[in-house]
Image 1 (cartoon, helix red, strand yellow):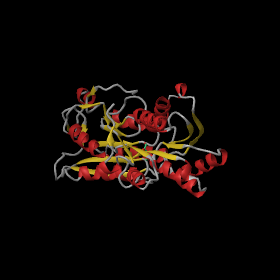
Image 2 (cartoon, helix red, strand yellow; image 1 turned 60 degrees about the horizontal axis):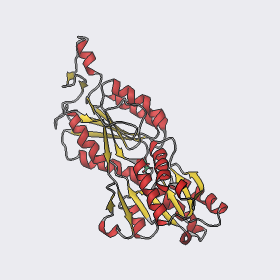
Image 3 (cartoon, helix red, strand yellow; image 1 turned 90 degrees about the horizontal axis):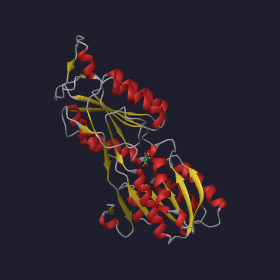
Image 4 (cartoon, helix red, strand yellow; image 1 turned 135 degrees about the horizontal axis):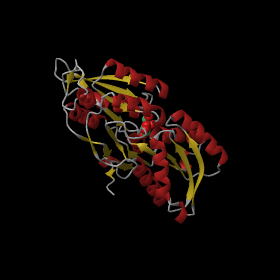
Amino acid sequence: MRVILRRSGSRPGGMALVAAGAVVLVTACAGGAPKKHAGTAEDPWVIGMSQCNLGEPWRVQMDADVRAAAEKHSNLKVIFKDAQNSSLTQRAQVEEFVDQGVDLLIISPKEAAPLTQPVAAAYQKGIPVIVLDREVQGDQYTQFIGADNVRIGREAGRWIRETLGGQGKIVELEGLMTSTPGQDRHQGFLEGLDLEHNPGLQIVFTGEMKWLEPDARTEMESALATNDHIDLVYAHNDPGAHGAWLAAKAAGREGEMKFVGIDGLPQEGQQYVAQGILDATFLYPTGGDVAIDEALKILGGQQVEKKIVLGTRIFTKDNIQQGGQPITN
Ligand code: FRU
């Protein structure tokens, strides 16, 4: 973990405005920041939800989870924006939300570096910001919510080492390596594999599929062309693992190897495991429901944790009917 768990004030920046004795024409909330809406059914709080893309089922699910949780509260309204996998677009959309005067921002950023500044700018203007799933740099936001990707990668690496009995040729298909889950799932994987003590394990091919199934398919075609034998594919997400499987199937080689992914959506990864396409997937919760719970606390003036770490589960053919198994260590 790079960020230490700690408490933080829920609304930054606002006290200075009040202390300066300026004539504040907007309603001031407990923390002192300008609040644009009352948080009633007549005048609901407005949350801007900035999604980095809606091209993958997992992100569609995240927005659906946010929407379902928000719909239970008549004093909340969520406006969704889709950045269509462009950090530049997402940056502009965050700035639009700020200009439009949202009460709180939820962002699931595409990449850390380009989104750090607009998030910090919003936060410094007194808009609470919840960062979901992928991280930004520094600590200029209210709260981060997400699963521990190093841990998930480590569990995947350990499962792979044990399943292969310390012997085998592995392909790693990486997510976007300018996003923190890609970096963390790689680092954890190496820790779990423990190549130093398991010289029989070999990573024979590494490709960056940037979270996208078509890119995974292309990368896997290269891996197949340059390797006579592959024992297992570890992909940083389920679309990647599925793309690899499609390439192996097209080459008539899908039976030669195992496939491991991450996300574990019921309608995607869990389905693939049930169908025997994937050998394992690890749950990566969207956190959409948690974000709404936390947003309500923040808007209500409560203190919240700086970081909330979500849990994970493993799904294999042996436990899929029982809903997978939680990872507790
Ligand atoms: C969707 C996705 C998921 C992955 C997450 C990582 O865009 O690629 O498949 O788990 O993002 O941030």
